[in-house]
Image: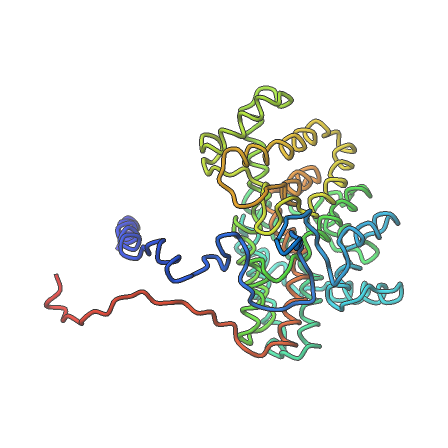
Length: 452
């Protein structure tokens, strides 16, 4: 069978799958099925308990649920207070907030120093791992490269299937520590072997913060400004955790509940995050903005920009999806607290990089898009900019290649995944097994000679 035969077969039978296996949408309503585990108002099905984080988007007023400015809490602390804590003291926050999420308390100076030392000590790859695993079969899909590396690391762990909390914690700390190396080295291999560019493999520097080391690993000259590192650090903190209901964290808990090992769990979470409906949103924002700048002659002309947004909503512009990317969130309605915090850092970096005109364009769209969506779309709740509306813009200003946008998300979110894996192991001993209602019809078997 030649390649064309296979393609003809798959096309023919894909059409058959679509025709034969389509389920009438009315049946989901008839049987009370909440597609996406969310009701028609967007409220998620309660499937677990957690003390790791809390997302607040509404308040009870006179017995009614009323939307409010979004709030995000890590282990009971408001994310605004946590970020302000290290920002006002001009410190890096990743290590401190990672400690909080993993151990349910803010560290004192001695605890933070010890934790940072352990992360540094865990930041080691097996001998020749970079050459034999990362450099072999490089891919432009760095999320796939990262997943491959994580699964391969299991082969070097003599206690891979030990589910004791101390062993799982060791594994999680190691993966948190090496994620930047796995990610950036994977990109460098792709950039060298597939794009014929120079190859840079830099070693981390234990004197630097987590965010500083990412920029050091990525840049040919290993140089960066303090503000660049501080803005990346803030991005990591804001993406680090977001409740148990997001797709990749729920995946973490589902696979953990089966008794699987840490490497398999994190690989599953990575596979979930790479989907464009989850971790790839900021890439869509960047591409949308590039398309806007190509099709709007004067990006300071509010009427022209507004007309472009309307054409997007009418499926006449960009990817014809009808979506203004970076706007709206499954939970938040009035505002995403992460976007409100991050905008302060974005403005600082835009000023330093001489990109204030583009920052003003983003701000204009942030203001106008909710108005246009409200006017032109049928929505059940308010719409506001989410954190990914600005994150792609920041990564571009930091000269981070687009192939690394979602992996940077993963570098942050593995902390939250680790906290949820440990919480699931400690508190729940049942496999997560949701119910599906079968709507199949019984049929009588026919001998192959009787089938037409």
